[in-house]
Length: 119
Image 1: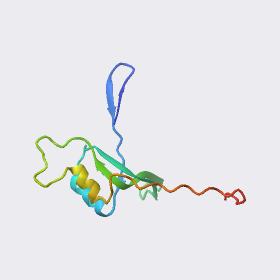
Image 2 (image 1 turned 90 degrees about the horizontal axis):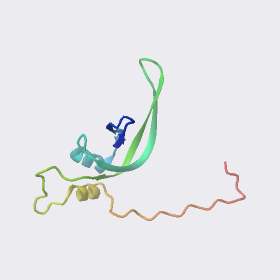
Image 3 (image 1 turned 135 degrees about the horizontal axis):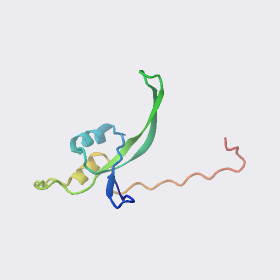
Image 4 (image 1 turned 120 degrees about the horizontal axis):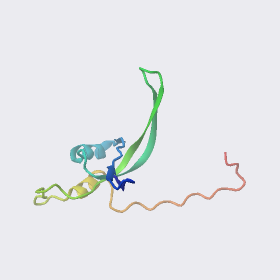
């Protein structure tokens, strides 16, 4: 969310909602733990969907995120504690999504060959 103050001194909060698509086990975990208004950190790639509106015939498009990793953020709800042998939601979510706490090292990008045409 973005919090800002208007020229008249009024404090406002602006929220942006983005459609996210998860697949596999990450989708199952998201369905179980995510609720409206719950802060979450998501990494993924952008995908542009395009279609023709059946009613108006206009071309439409929507940008969405294809989620690859998800991490719940913020504190647990008041009174909610992990039982014996249970781990915190963040730990379960990261493990269930098949992601470790440290990202894998990135491979170096190949160096361009000056003799090749770039297209």
